[in-house]
Length: 244
Image (cartoon, rainbow, N blue to C red; front, side):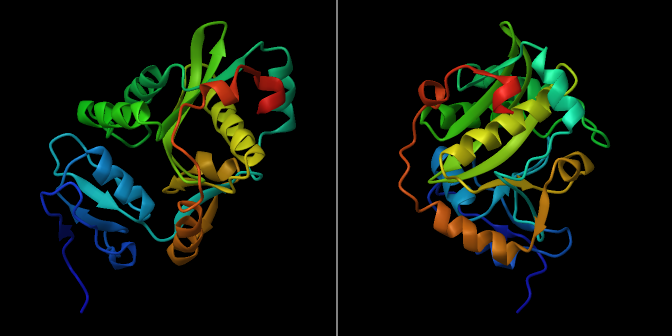
């Protein structure tokens, strides 16, 4: 039987999600509503190919769209002209040293076609809590000590789920994404989940994957042995010109 309404989640934080394959076609990917943003609930969602996305005043909504936007970690594209401009920039990259600042900057960044932000105060605190547990990570782009770009997301096993990125200077988000992909690729991680389509991501090499294909790779990667921990020590400070 086809469902015509999203699944209402039980109050228990460890209550299971319905299979991602049962998400609605219209609106594309809407799967469930309700629940909370506890670490247990969020980790269960991501491990099942599901993510939260809602605006202030809405109930908590959970999604798994089809197709899914993804980046291969060896497939992020920066133009030759942009790469040349990085050589004289002096920008550097670090990981997990300014997580709260990155997510707050993402929350404050205007988005074309959006009135307000979906990164609510509760969302910020939920991902800061995941960061404290070693599951949420940020890549920071710095000009000296000034934050000029960044990206954050969630890592389970060897699968990275990108959530949002921002630029305080032109190209800051591009450098953050490319630096993330370079780092993950060097560690043997094949894929970055980019969730839903936009033109900016497509211009940088994002691909449409059928949800079935995406879930097949995800289910293998989240089982890979990778302890949750801060990335700051392994990532260290890197020159943007060589790591993006």
